[in-house]
Image (cartoon, rainbow, N blue to C red; front, side, top):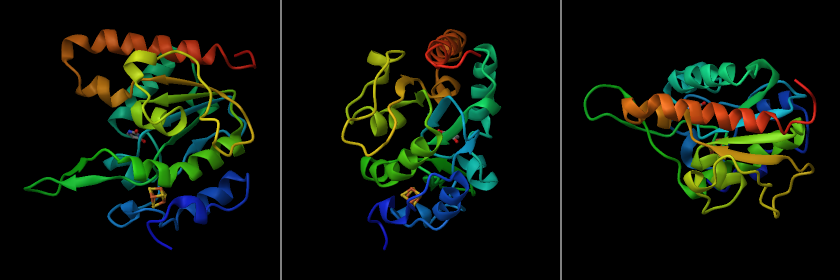
Length: 217
Ligand code: URA
Ligand code: SF4
């Protein structure tokens, strides 16, 4: 089985360790070929808050863990500013393999956005994580995660910070609130004079998401 979606590789289990182990062998789309490894989600099994990025970057692909590079550092600062303890959350990505192109000269690997078919191929893994963790709130960091979970044509700029539900047809046993905000990398890539404002807006969105979690924090 190859390039036919991750579904066939996902065990019927709500055990995160089992899911993670199975994901190491996923050939559900072509992205496993060039990447070093599957980068599965990481965090607390009983997390009330799940954060979903786009896909692992260069450093995540080497480390085997999500959000450990520059975007992860910015995310960590935003979480701290919003009084959220990352170790209390579950952090993952919409797509579990790093997609990149090689720089013309040198070995640098440059991030390439996953396409819709790859996002959909990988979604069964994300849904399995949601089923296993049963979070109160899922925060989509950027358009890729939002398009995977809220809707194909979802626009973060128009609907950030609003609360949504998972796309109804998705096979998930729980019904978390789903928020979308910008991806931390968009702040790093954006104009320097807008960074402070963009960071503050991200913190506001994270605060509003956490305030919808059931348990007091
Ligand atoms: N960007 C993401 O979307 N996810 C990561 O894990 C790292 C960078
Ligand atoms: Fe499987 Fe997702 Fe990797 Fe594609 S990106 S091979 S669906 S784990």
